[in-house]
Each structure stands twice: as structure tokens, then as C-alpha cells.
Image 1 (tube, rainbow, N blue to C red):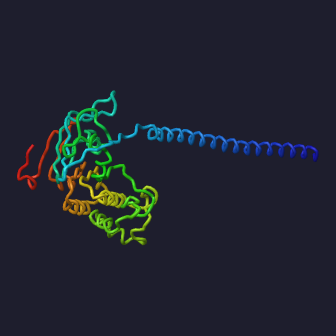
Image 2: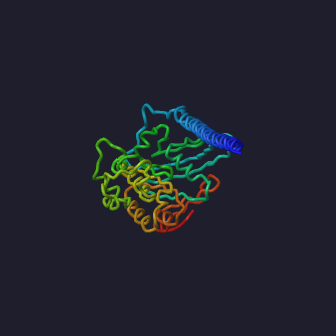
Image 3: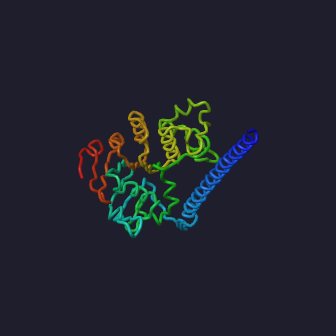
Length: 304
């Protein structure tokens, strides 16, 4: 009896050891396979990031004008003539023979359905995209003759994809200038209706915004970006949904402050409050200017 029990106990113990070993090796196998899958995903992500980096590294450098043309002393006009742009030869053109003239001091809203080319048009004005057809002239001078550097010194922009950088709020507004004009930066922040909120922060203007501005709300980021655009003292201000994260009252405050500045504004907008703040509305449709409407306040009539 005792011998049989001993044999049974020994057999059961051996089975338990085998079971425990199986589960232990199975756990190790699962961990190794999981780690292998994680590394495979990281390698694929590294490949994707490498391709995105290659787009920048291998991009054709922007042309530099050796002797850029000079503009007159007055505020320049912005004129687009027969502008055409497509993202590739295999795609339909986004802009088709578009003609538009913006006078000094104009406040213009570009509106239209999604996909009609509003942001593309703005990027052509900025020189980010070069049109395949037509011309962009500033003060009567072709953009290619004026040079992108000279043009960008004259403009301030806030685009939908713009980001803040790791550093202080003052650094971001002054774009990390070696000798920042702090008084002017604070004035720009007041125009953007963000100065009071900055001064209420524990470290004030030296508050760190974190990587990509993650420590701030969407509305605060937009207003700091606007203050940064104004800090350049631009002659043209281009905004692409730059106040979309603000409430109605705050947006009215910002629009009213900018309206007092001697600056030509071009705004891509959907919100009625933003559209109501300008004196001219350009309606895009099928890549062309479908309507050019001026407010009663700016012209005494409304026409096409």
C-alpha cells in the first residue's frame, strides 16, 4: 500500500513539475514574441519617420534671388493673375485661372465649402506652394523677382498646423530672439487678448509652455501664435482659422483689436463672427473666385 502511494505521489509530483515548466516556458515565449512584435512596430515607425525626414532633406532648396527687386515706399498690393495650382499632374487642379487683387489695408475673408482650395490659395500667397500657372505680384513686383526672404519679412502668419516650441511664453512670442523687444511682445500679447492670462500665471512671461505647447489650452496657444505673428510688425497678416478655438466674446475682442492696426489682413474663415469682422468676402468655388463681396460699412454698397 505504501509503495503504491509513493509511486502515485511521485508520478503526481512529476506531472505538476511538467505543468509548471510548461506554463513558465509559455510565459517566457509570450513575452519574447510580444517584445519581437514591439520591435517590429518600432522598426516600421523608424522607417516611416525616415521617409518623412527624407522628404525634407531631399527637397529642392528654395531659390535665392541674388539681386531682389525693391518695392516702392507705400504699402504694397497683393495681386494674383490667372493662378493655377495642382498637387500633382495626376490630380485635378485645385486652383484654376484665379484672379484676385488685395489693396493695402484691406481686411479679406476667404470662404467656401471644404476642399474648394482656401488653404491652398493662402499657401500660394505665402510662397509655400509655387503655382504651375499665373503670377503672384506684391506691389507690382513678381514674387520670384522680389524673393521669398524679402516677402516673408513682410508677412505674419498663423496656420492651422502651427505649433509652439519648448521654452517660455516670451521666447515663443519673440521667436527666441537674441535681444527680444519685451515691451513690444507684451503689447502684441495684449492685442491678442492673452496678456492678462499670462501675467496671472505663476511664472508670468517666463512660464514654460512644454513640448508643442501641451501645457496650454487650444485658445491660449492660438492667441500666443497670433502675438508671435504680430511681433514681426508685418504689413500683411495671413490667418487660417486662427481663432477657431476661441469663444465668441474673446474672438470679437481679438478681431476688434487687430482691426485697429494698420495692416492688410487675409483670413480663411468659417465662423460668422470672423467673417463679420472683415470688409470684404471672397467666395471660392471650383478653384475660382465665385463672388467678391464688400460690406456696406466699407463701400456703402454690396456688390459683386
